[in-house]
Image (cartoon, rainbow, N blue to C red):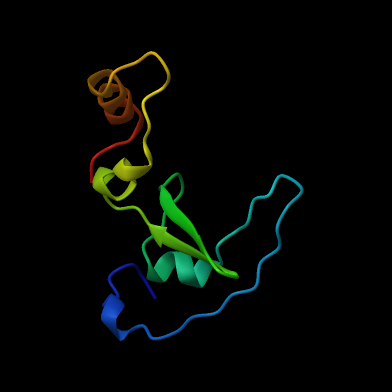
Length: 89
């Protein structure tokens, strides 16, 4: 299975993973390949009730709402810093 799978045809995938001492998890290989999640890709993580949802962040627009300007910096400088940090897809 490679990353060209039609996402609408995927109904359910389950993987078991362990939370490390640093709070990290490994997304199972089959799920990474199916969703085209590669090394160093950004993912969007949200908590909903008792669930954690991890979604590939394919665009800077996926994570832009999470960016906050550091104290003492204006929005334009924060955007410039964000664009240097995250690549466009």
